[in-house]
Amino acid sequence: MKLKGSCHCGAVAFALDSHTPQPYMRCYCSICRKTAGGGGYAINIMGEAAGLKVRGEKYVAVYRARIKEGRAKRPSLSEARRHFCSKCGSALWLWDPSWPEWVYPFASAIDTPLPKPREEVEIMLDYAVPWAEVPKGRGHSHFREYPKESIAGWHKKRGLDVA
Ligand SMILES: [Zn+2]
Image (cartoon, rainbow, N blue to C red; front, side, top):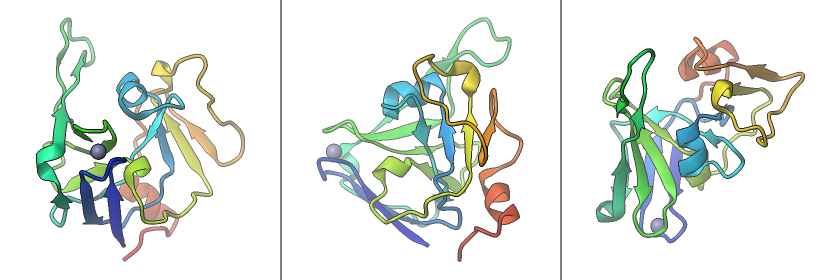
């Protein structure tokens, strides 16, 4: 499936292929909340880095957060590169050299109509703020940090991966 996305001011537009377009995973971590998540979370989907095309590349800025990993005493620079528009601040996509073949666009930046997921996964709930609405009940799975199931695995198991 071809996905097109853009920032709000239009300086940046991008396109990529995705086999895993369901916007089913809400991340409540502090980085997602502060940089992209007005509702206390952000939703990332996954696509192929190889075919990523970007217009307005000179307006794309990159943020690498400082985070404390595990038992580390000091924060270190996160490998994840959060790409955003330097003119309007829209969060665009995340890319991490640990998984170079994938790119993780923010669902909020995608203009192509995405499927509405029948199930949702809420992750990084250890870091959620008290005011954030975390949906509960049928069709919702909650995780304190990252789930073991990958985005690709989640789609495959439900027969939702697309060509
Ligand atoms: Zn912009």
